[in-house]
Length: 613
Image 1 (cartoon, rainbow, N blue to C red):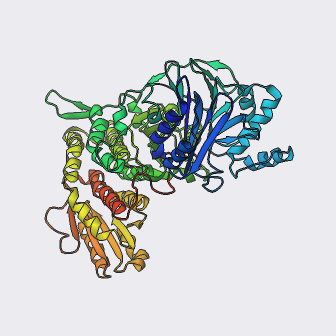
Image 2: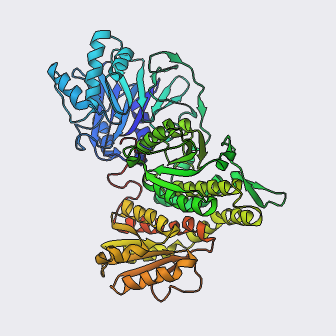
Image 3: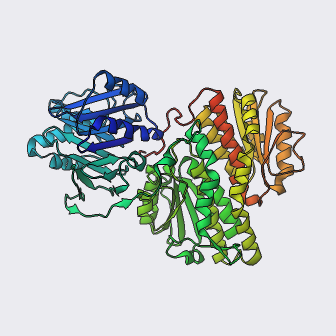
């Protein structure tokens, strides 16, 4: 973990590598480094901390060359320090390696290499790859063959880039379970873990598939399968603008992306709405789904995801059960494959992943597919591993999301799940005619209502200024609201580092109320009209324990005004209210982070794309 870049061509590699690493900062990291061939030797510069620390080190001892690799590391093996930072080299310094992923058998390989007289400098699993590659290089004198033979000994996940001073005209790369993208230029070629690092230089990219290798030269790229047989693949053209990855005047990417949600929701929803001659939405059509009639024969929906995406799945559970009357199971992907799950060929198995590369989600998907389930992927990244391996893919057209804490990707995921649930209900004959069109009209109006909430963000900022020093924050809700509370609490803890939890409101008296005291803020999400009385009684319970209370609700009558600080959202069909209720919570998390002096774009210990288990 967490970001790989590479360059080979005629230009000075160092500034290109550093700027590409900057484009990958959103993935989270604790150290950074580069290795550049200067015409005689491979020169390594690396430093613990932010990228600016690496830049300082480079400025003190500049390195020039036309080929190099770089890395931002998120520690897995060994603490964050200069020694454990990537790149790693063999003993003579003739081979340098950067690596994302985890080498699961590194201890065994390390022990064997030490028995061969190898002295290790770091605690990392990656250094094993450098020494193992050198071991095979001394037998083959061919860096490609050496890498290929080393890969055969590795167990676990990897995206690798290797350079060798004896082959200064090429970079050898490989991937298994971790993403890697090759950028094709004119007289130069590029490498990165993600597209934003490349599009300043090229829009023609090749996504490496599972267990593939590539060799980058300045004038061409050769692609190979796991057996070393050369293969041909047409490049993919990236059509989104590099400007989408800039802040555009916002203080942070997180705030920018919160404000981009009306557009992200519109881009995700509107192309799927079929309209009549008067512009009225009358149906849903997923152009990318080959057989939407599959819903007639589906008997169960299984949803699996990690983190924020799993909470989109929790909202979807209520939507599918309410509209399509299908039983739904939602599983955390990191647990799924270890419980010996049961899948059927009549299951719709939905995986949700912003990056499309989440390791646990990918493993769960592969298991379900092997058991015969039909896989539907909901992801934001075209060409990602999950999108390529699924039977059907529904893209969230949210655009690049740079901040580590997901905002617009989450609401776009929820929108996709609503669309899928409504389409399933319609095909199954449970939502037809005026009732169906009314539901579509409600969805159609959501982006404007999100905009309305964003236009009144000062009220949320004021609340944050008063509450950012609370010891505990509890989100409580019922049904759909309980599902969205999980995401609200996660967002707050991710960026503000405040202790926040979500509870089903009815469970308060079964234990959590013991934690409520004057240092507690309790936020009640109350959008389900039939349950207003129930949630109000919960607010009274915590208020009597001297907690500060706040309510997020679509009620306009002031029903909760006497028992909590009142934060009204626009009125909407109850089932769709979560997508509005989460917006104030995102802003609250952002402003609490600011008032506490945190960088909301780069929360500590977190990575944007979790590609290791």
